[in-house]
Length: 255
Image (cartoon, rainbow, N blue to C red; front, top):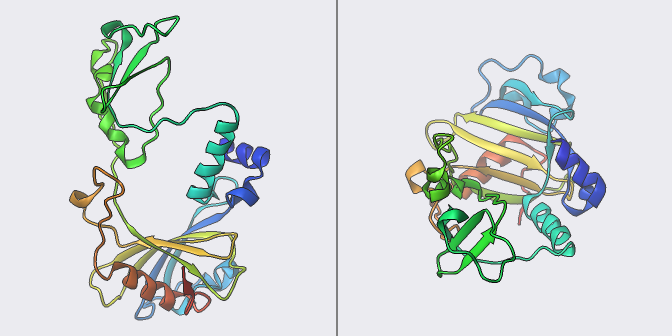
């Protein structure tokens, strides 16, 4: 949290990747009308953009002293640009293994032996003193790397990094000044059966990012993130729920 704030101040994150601090709420909605309407919603004026007759519960999950938001694509591209301007090189490839260099050949072009040898799928070797894995839901694959199995000073822990692929839509509502809130919405009473869980993120550029309708765990993540798996009707369900929950979002343009 602190590092994100520092980066935003240093690199104009509010403009470049829509950084801002936010309030975060868990909201329980009944789309058929709240059976026991939340008595405090009248005091929750910031949530006046949610139809209060549907709200059965509100719990504040985070506030501006511990919660902030960025737009992931813009953040990643901006930070990578800053890294490149400092001489960082991008090399595309698929890592299949990392081993301690004492058990691998020394690169003749390297003046000193590096700590780690990185094996790429095409057979090329890279050499490094530090390896940082930042692969999101795919990061658990590092458990297969020999470097974790070679160390005798610890037992390789299970790395509990999993991924659920969800659907998402981006909207541009008529109201452009939705407050800085992130909503985790538990929805009942939909015509789709069961309960739905969706997330609603207004952004500083006037758009709203909505996600939910996750696929089953066995369907995600695919080995190649470019292989898209879509559940028919999922985005339409998201849209219908959000249009019902907020008059300020209803009828928004789908980007």
